[in-house]
Image 1: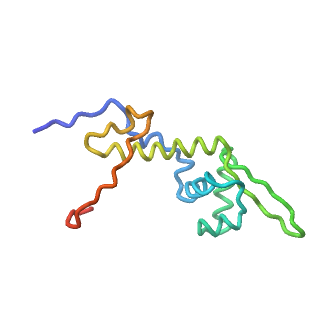
Image 2 (image 1 turned 90 degrees about the vertical axis):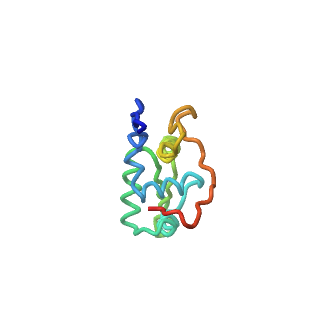
Image 3 (image 1 turned 180 degrees about the vertical axis):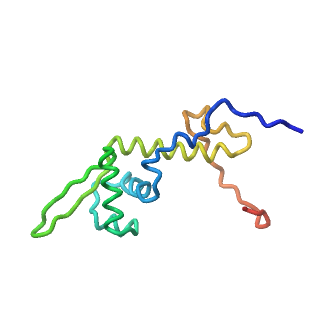
Length: 135
């Protein structure tokens, strides 16, 4: 019977950024990474979250210098604009690479996060037969 050898490398999950890993904060950074400054109302609708939830997520990310917040008065209303910083973009890309490494670490024959600049090899779009159990 084959013996399972432990890799001297630590599991890639240890490199996940817990600040980004929250579903709302992750979704927020994902939305901002391809957009310029975005209106708060647009983000709340896009992410399907309450103003309070979005405000909390923005505050946490702004405190960590991952996003910027700019307020602008228009008439008697204040509009809030949110943008991703260079630090935020880098942290988000690193988090995505770590997620890919985690996915790659479960593929037989995969080197996980080794040999590809810290990134797992892209997954093939292979079809799973209908009779294959997924759980």
